[in-house]
Every structure is written in structure tokens, then in C-alpha cells.
Image 1 (cartoon, rainbow, N blue to C red):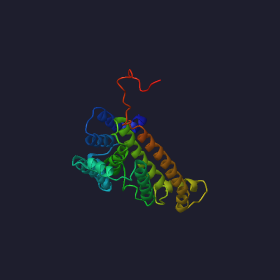
Image 2: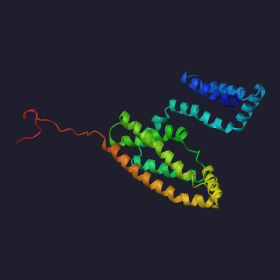
Image 3: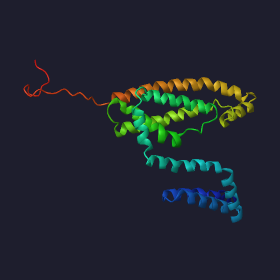
Image 4: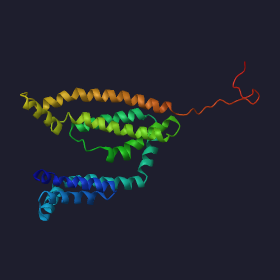
Length: 245
């Protein structure tokens, strides 16, 4: 019986699963799940509401990400993606590989300085980088098909991930660096966060070089998929053959 009571707070997980399966609004589903788990844990309604209120106040910075989505939606409705694509098309020297490598370098440098939330999928990749990359790829002379467009968008997202992942480890105040320091400290090895960050720098450089090579190969593949604009004409008097014996 005691074991059963110990597992009762997990009823909130079932509420979340059921709510998402029935396609209910996620916000009330999560709130109801929290209330159910609180009641199952023996908390009163007042204690549960106080806990939700304290959590909301302490994590109010997360609302910035919620406000980002409607702002991006308004910009896209106003034609942001189309304007970006047309602007990139007018820049002759900007190719797909150059664009992605410059973004990768900027993303890594910002992450190294601890500014890893300045860019990201929602605020940068979807509204800006992906349309710019599509416009750069279409400089091959023909529009991208659906599969190629999805590949370009996925590669842009991968570039953002790699830039952040391998750049943020160089920032000494990152939680992962402190976790590594704590792990080694438990085993009698004392390391300073600066030492760990400096040893992560060669990895970040190697990641940049490897992904830069992948970017060049990807850009060549996209450019090589362009249909040929010059189709050899058939002479009407040779029976449909393109040459003579």
C-alpha cells in the first residue's frame, strides 16, 4: 500500500499523455497534470497554486521564447521570407556554402562568449537563415524541388546545432563545463573551468573544419542537381537520331 501511494504522483504523467493523445491545448493539460500530481502527493489546492505561481515568477524569462513565435509569424505574413530570398539572389558573391560557413562561425563565436540564446532555430534559422540559404541555392538557375528545399532547411538547422554545441563548451560558466569539473573532482582530479574550456577549443575548431567540408560537399550536390537548361534538339530528317553514322 505504501508503494502504491509512492507512485500516485505519477498520475500527472498519464494526464499529459492522454491530453496530448486527444490533441487538447497543451497549456491547460500541463496545468491540470500539475494539479493532479500535487493532490496525489498530499498537497492542498493553496499549496499547489502557490507552487505554480512561484514557478511562473522564477521562470518568467521563458516567456520571451513564447513571444518570439507570434512575432516571427507576423513577420513571415508580411513577406519576410520572400524579401530575404530576393535580397540574397541579388548578392552575386554569396553562395550557399559561404553563407552557411559564415553563420557557423558567428554561431560558434557567440556560443563561446556565452551568448548561445542570441540565435537559434525559432528566432534565426526558420525566418532568416533558411530563406537565405534557399535563395543562395537557387542561384544555380532553377528552383529547388520539395526534397531539396527540405534538405537545405535541415542542413541549416544542423549548422545551428553544431555551432552552438561545440561552441558553448568553450564558455567557462556553462553548466556542462561545471559538470565535467565536478565529475573529475569526485575522482580526485582537480581541474579549473578555464582548463576545461581551453581543451574544448581544439574540438570546436575541428568541428568547424569538418562541417565546413560537409557544407561545401552539400552545396555542390545541390548545385549539381540543377536540370540542364540546354537540351539537344533532334533533327526531323534523321529519324529521331541525334547523330549520323
